[in-house]
Amino acid sequence: MNKIPTWAKFYLYGLQGIFTEVVYTALYDTIADKNRKLIGVSSVWAFLIYAASHLVIEKMSAFLIKKNISILFRAFVYVLWTFVWEFSTGFILQMFNACPWYYEFSYNFMGLVTLEYAPLWYIGSIFAEQVTIPCVNSLHFISFKQSKKM
Image (cartoon, rainbow, N blue to C red; front, side, top):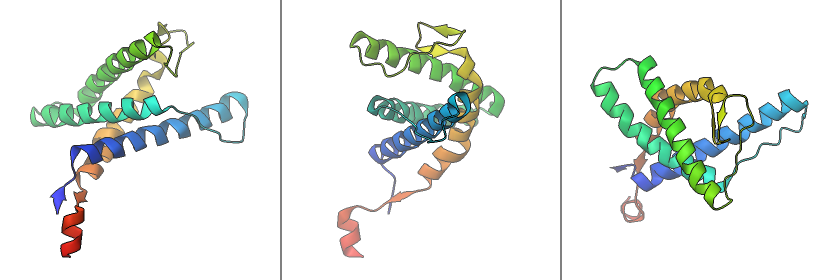
């Protein structure tokens, strides 16, 4: 058995991101609009964005933990990364009229990022570092060739 390859991590991180966004949007609509249908939405772009971002956070996490940086500060760094990544990917997608989000909150910047989500990104980044990344890294990969030998 081998450690899980990067392409598999990308896939699992993307699924986690999409799942979280769909649940969040369903709950948000339930609270904001009293819509009890629990219909959540996302975008295929979000899959790619979440997957790539998690891979970067995984590398940052390993580095920051090795330097004995506190989890509270690490989460702050992850939130900064998230804002940079969300803005950059949103800006590029917006150039092609393909950006699936536009924030209309009070503290948004160009509709691509909003400070109102900072607490959610903070909690989410701690969850990613403490739960998602360790769970994914604990997985092992069995190739088709290896499974035939078993």
